[in-house]
Amino acid sequence: MKSLKPRVGVIGFGYWGPNLVRNLIHNGECDLVGIADPNESALKKFSKLYPHLSTYTSAEELLEKTKPNAMVIATPPATHKDLALLCIDSKTHLLIEKPLAQSVDECDEILTAASKQDCLVMVDHTFVYNPAVRFLAEQIHCGNLGELLYYDSVRVNLGGFQPKTNALWDLAPHDLSIIDYFTEGKMPAQVSAVGRKHFDNDIDNLCYLNLIYPNNFIAHLHLNWISPIKIRTVLVGGSQKMAVYDENMPTEKIKLYDRGLSLVKEKPAPGDFRVSYRMGDMTAPTISGSEALEGVIKNFIKMTKEEILPITDGDAGKRVVQILEAATKSMDENGSPVTISNLYNNTWLKKVA
Image 1 (cartoon, rainbow, N blue to C red):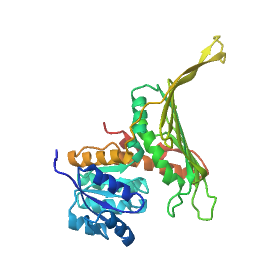
Image 2 (cartoon, rainbow, N blue to C red):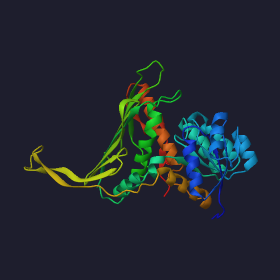
Image 3 (cartoon, helix red, strand yellow):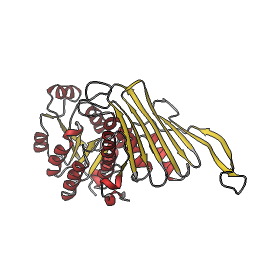
Image 4 (cartoon, rainbow, N blue to C red):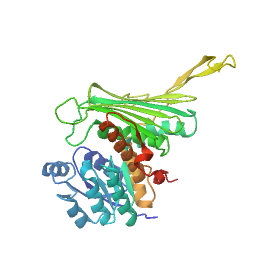
């Protein structure tokens, strides 16, 4: 186990990089050795906030001059593979912004290279470290909700258009990583998705995604860049209890409902039954107000110092990309279901204990 503070470098100071840098500095358990960004205005912004830290115009220069043992990649997905391979070649552990890469093949390149160099890869699936999500995961894993039946999410807002991605790849990783965490790495048997391009830019601004699991669990995601209001609501149904998670609520983000129904047969004949409803209490547990990124950075530093697998490791990142890739294929075929086992060999998908 290593005890020295990790030397951490950051690539990218655009949209998400400033949040990661702020949390790295606030953490205090690592030494931030500098950032790299080819954009001069981004470097000026960084220097104004952190004048005592070094800036570089390329990842190569940052790696060469600072010799970090861990790197954070906060750049567009199209750059992830090449930057990750560059860092791995310098034998650094990695935290990579979601999604891990643009394809499963790129994920394989990253993870294979990392394995050969004994480098660990963590993906910034931020919501997995959200205190509300972690509380709900505990309720699921301890059996408080019973058998998991469904996950129904609405993740919509006005805007978010990007030149090289669509609503599916931008918004779905949040819910897919949460589902991956709730199900402990289980993969759906079948994926279907439909999207629509309402503007002249050949980019899907809206998507409806369905995931069918072998154990009768089902997930539905509504993803939309052209909603008049911002909604971040998840319904999770279990055989014993149900939960509502509303990220937009200032308090009571999680509400647990001791409610449900069951079918009571009145006669032996098939189809004869009555419905019994259970209308129990609603509870709103107190949830920590700590920032999710604080948890991300804590887990990243722990991974780097102790050289242990993080919660959202490279395989978790690959599973998310695999579903995104299958959903993209379904969208290209106007919603035709895609069977996961027909696309990939899933022997690697069993989550490491």
